Structures are given as C-alpha cells and as structure tokens.
Amino acid sequence: MILLSFLGCVVLPGILTALYLWLVAADQYASKVGFTVRQEDAASAIDLLGGLSNLSSSSSSDTDILYEFIQSQKLVADIDRKIDLHAIWTPDDWDPVFRLADDAPIEQLLAYWEKMVRISYSSGLIEVEVRAFRPEDATLIAQTLLDESSDVINELSAVARADAISYSRDELDEAVERLKEARETVTRFRNETQIIDPQIDLQSQAGLLSNLQAQEAEQIIELDLLRETSQQSDPRVAQAERRLEVIRARISAERQKLGFEGTGQGGKVFADLVGDYERLSVDREFAERAYLSALAAYDSALADAKRKSRYLAAYMQPTSAETAEYPQRITLLMVVTLFLFLLWSTAVLVAYSVKDRR
Image 1: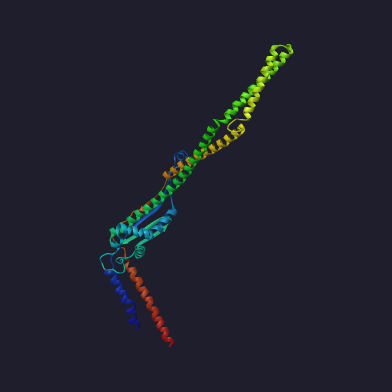
Image 2 (image 1 turned 120 degrees about the vertical axis):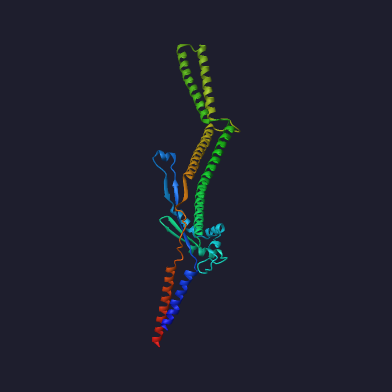
C-alpha cells in the first residue's frame, strides 16, 4: 500500500509533470533592459567662471516613481494598446499553464504581467527581465517599456519646469501690476497738484527765501550806515527804509507761500503735499524693486529650466535572446516532485499515527 501510494502520489504526477514540461510547455525567451534616472545640472556662465562644471546625479525619488509605474495597470494597458500583449502572450500552441488566457481582462493581464516581467531595483538602478514565447516579442516588449518609461520621466521634467516658470511668471505679473498702479498714482498726484516734484519746488522756495533774508541783512546794515552819516531828512534814508519794507514784505509773502499752497477749496499745506509725494515715491520705489526682484527670479527660473533636465539613462539596451531560458523545466520538476513527496510523507505519517491509536 505504501509503495502503491508512493507510485500514485509522487512518481506518476512527477512523470506527468515532466511530460508536460518537455512536450507541451512552450519555450520562453527573455530580454533584459537596465536603466536609471539621471539629472543633469549644466553650469551657468557665472558658475563656469567660478570653476564649476556640469554636475550629473541620480534622482532616487524619480526612480522610485518609475519603479512603481512599471508595475501599474496604466502602463500595461498602454503597452497592450500599442503592441497587443494578448496576441504576444497567447500563442497558437496548447499550453493552459504558461500562456495567457484568451480575452483576458485587464486585471488578469496585469497579474500575468507580474509573472512575465520581473523587476529588480537596487541603488537607483532598475533592471527588467521580460519573457515571451518568441525572442523578438520579448525584445519588443522591453523596448516599448523603455520608451514608455522615458516618456514618463520627460513628462515629469516638463511638469516641474512648467510649474517653476508658471509660479515665477505669476509673481512677475503681480509686480508689473503693482508698479503700474504706483506710477499711475504718482502721475495722478502731479496732475492734481500741478507739481512735478515738491522736493524741487521746496528747494527753490527755500533758496529764494534765503536770498531775500541775505538781502534784508544787507539792507539793514546799509540803512544803519546811512542814518549814522546823514540827516533824517535825507531822501536816501527814506528810500532805504522803503526798500527794506519791500524786502520784508516779500519775505513774508514767500514764507506764507512756502507754508500754504492754494490748491482747491481752502488750499493745502505745502508740507502735506511733500509728505504725500514722499509716501507715493516710497511706494513706487518699493514696486520698482519688487519688479526687479520678480524679473530676476523669472529669468533665474528660465535659466534653471534650461540647465536642469531629467532623462532616462539606459545602461543596458534591450537584449535579444538566442536560447530559451524558461520555463526552467528541471527546477520546476524538482520543486513539484519535492512538494508531492512531502505531501505523501505527511499523509503516510498521519495514517500510521491513526493506526497506532486504534
């Protein structure tokens, strides 16, 4: 009974498995491709003057994204749409174990993809082994996978550049609008007050007042000298006194003009006009500096977008197989036979244990 059970549970299934593997199972050819994501930082003219050269580095985050993308349903659907994976993985040979089922849905195709496409990821390097029933089909799938991965990295790089430029452009547009508003406010102030620059008018008025005060001092001295050297009825004394009164009246008028400017009803204090103009000037200068800063940031974003680039670097192009490596018939036969033997041994031990209890 033990011998018959061994023959029926281990030897016979093993023989059937060997017959299937060597007579029915179709040969599978493997194509390998290896790549990584690189990021180039081209030095600008200033960096070159400083002695810096182009920097090349690996982008681990992009490689992680790519690793997950290769196992995604979207990639499988896109490749199937381009090269028809159903036709490639459903050969005409009768092989229900290793071939893809006819009219398999996308979920089943994704599960089959995970069996036929093996991915290894280490130290930022991705290596993919693709299997198919013809060597040219395996190479075609590997090449299509490489092209799709390159498109994804290019899209990520384009999106990053577009975002950086877009943010800088928005800030530049805001700075331009602020500068326009500040300049329009200054122009409106000048039109309303009929004053180009209150600071210049203030300096002119102050200079005129200072000149009149100097003339007043000279006239006072001249009048004192005339009074000491001539009689009171001397017409030159009357003339000097009259001239002094005119100078003082002009000084008073200029002081009044400097302190009060008749613009509109009731007028407006000239000092207030100067204060308003200074406030508007500060706003305009701040807007101009903000505009220059935003413009520099925008130019820097454009330069960075041109210098920095991500790309997919293939250190191993898709290979073309000459010998079928799969299915690994001897390994599969040994695994199946060992499993059957362990299952048979467990059943025999359980049977003896039950017999001893009786």
